[in-house]
Every structure is written in structure tokens, then in C-alpha cells.
Length: 298
Image (cartoon, helix red, strand yellow):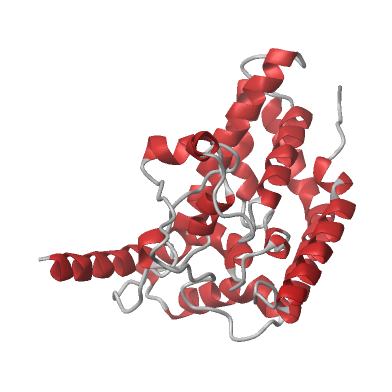
């Protein structure tokens, strides 16, 4: 079995229909959950991401199949292997997603998804154009070394992304407690998209929230604190090209200006890192907030 259908491509009509329903419903209720310009930016970035993948994905695919030649095992296309692939892929999605927030080079692509100050179904489609260049695919290579066929991982990876679509909403408050305990939900993922200090760099899960609970990155949504969406330094407009490339431009400027011994750090350190400490990273923001909380409670 050399290929399987891409679930996300088959789901495009569903995406369009549900975004339209969500937008119309929001406009009728005047709840402020959608903005026309922001939605257009998100949908354009999503469309561009599909074409960017077609144009550049061949490089990643070539490396993946080359690595697959050195696999340790031949994982069969059996029912138990599909179940195993689901869990393994979801774990490595967590690894990738955490790295995407902690390594600036990878963040330069992933930041597109977080740059909306709204949280709705169109935000789910706000996808990067530079994933191949940002090497986001290298986090999947261990699965191919183990022996999972690339087609199998591509399929379960598509299912993973499909699952994450519906959790980009404020229309659902909480799911049943048992579901919230195990699965990624709108509540958990709202935390992930928040810029509130307590929520920064939390809830990286794809489908199963258990990874965050296992590795100390889980944070529950609080009812007493309104979530602010976006990135630390929000974009000033809805320019699509700027939304797609602004972090690459910023990184290039930092590389040009930085002393030689710090240049590499501007690629591999977390977003917001600076050699002179003049900027805020998620750690410094959260540490300052925690200090204020401690003073307030003492």
C-alpha cells in the first residue's frame, strides 16, 4: 500500500460550510467572535498553505522515504498497527508542537496559526506557508525509522488535524468531565491560543491532552480570567504577506544585527530571546507575572 487519501483535502467542503455557518451565526448574534478581514486572512493563509505544501512538500517527502529505508521494523497495515500509529503520531505531534513554541526557527512558520486575535473555526485554517522550510517535518522522522509507512503516518496525521478543527471555537464551553480529562477540547485549546501570562506555552496536545498532563505543560482554563488571543506582539493589520513572513523578516534582522557569537541563538532559542535581555520571552513574562501574584498574596 503506497498511498492513502488525505483526509484534510476531502474535508475542505466541510470546512467552508462550517466556517460560513459560524460566521453568519456570529453576525446575527453580534457576539464579536468573527471579523471579516481577519477571517479572510485566515482563509487565504489556509489556501496558500495547501499550495505551498504542493510546491515544497516534495523535498520533505524525499527525505522521509530515504529515512524509511533504514527502518528497524516493518510495521504492517493491520488494525493493531493503526491504533499504535494513532498514539505514536499523536505523541510526536505533541513533541513537534512544543518545539514549535520553543525554537524560533520552527516558530517562524507556526506563528501564523497564532497571529489571529480571534478564536473561531477560521482560525483553525490559518496555516503556515513555510512549514517545509522551517523543518517541521523532521519531528516525524523517528516514526519512519521505527518502521511506520509514510502513507500510514500521513493518514493518521490528517485525522489528527481534522480533530483539531472543531476545538477552535468559543461556542462550546466545556465537554463532559471524562472527556476533558483525556481529550483535547475547545477549553484546553483556548488556553493554548491565549497570551495571558498564566497560559503561555501550555496545552500543546493534538488529540490527547494526556501528553500535557504527563510532561507538565497542562493548564486548565479558568472562568475568572478572560482569555486574550493572539501573539505577544500582535500584528497591526491583516496584510496576508506580512502575516505569512513577518517572523522570518524579524529573525533576519536580528541575525544581521547580532554579534557573531549570538547569531545561532537567534535561530534556536525561544521566541523573544535576546542576547542583551532587552526583550520578553514567555518565561520572563510568566516569571514577572508570578512575582506579582506572589506579592499580591503575601
